[in-house]
Length: 366
Image (cartoon, rainbow, N blue to C red; front, side):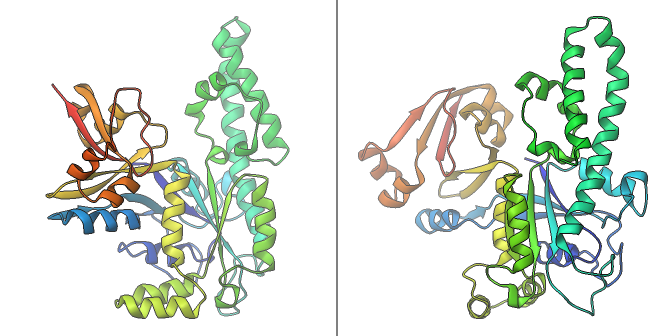
């Protein structure tokens, strides 16, 4: 799978610091705007306790975790939709991603310059929302010009697209993101999918706080949570400075002590990676054997043949059946013979929708 989450935000909100914690690919972190100019791409391992447990049971020769791609994108400023700052490049980089991790600064620090001179995450969110909405409005209006003649000539598909465009335009002109929009048919959504509208992408709001704001946030975070409810978006509280310190600790026990001192059971980075996986609508199934235990990434709702195709295209072409063990049963019985004896191995056909945590064998013939 190759879907990507893009980390966005104004300059100096902590994007690159977080990216450094997420990935071994180090983005330059400096106290001035636009220090990240080219997008940095990190292939990040997804923490999954189930993989650890299955590995303890099977004792394989190798382990392969699931991964997710995170892109660190240059900071945005007002006027980006008109090409200000690194606007065109920034917006182009967002367009190539599938979901957005929006980092908001929710801490005071006189030593870290804010591009607008003061800390106000609500204003910062609105700046980026406005720039993305203006870019989407431009995309929609250009599409309307192209499609209008076909619609006038009676092209039924073009009429549906034009109707969708008019609804998009009205919504955007109200200062609203497309992800909050209702009233389009599934066909209209499909017909306009190539517009790749920026504000239609799922979003995770990451509130970057200081240590005093852990673990639950502060007044600024509470305001962001209220706004996020209207977008059905998730909010995550992280202290990027503390995460940078945690990333430097190689000893697991030291990390645990550090986290406990902060009132945390799990690092913010681990939570962020899992959240990124979720907003991309990913789930995991496992293959378990003596040679390898592996986590495979698929899109939620995928059927067994397509899930098999993630391993190899021949598995999908020649799919016969899938043998499925639920994760909890694997942990309970601890071996496939015991699972079969207990009648807990299911045999599923082409219409089976793979569930998160399924342990699977595929039978195929090419």
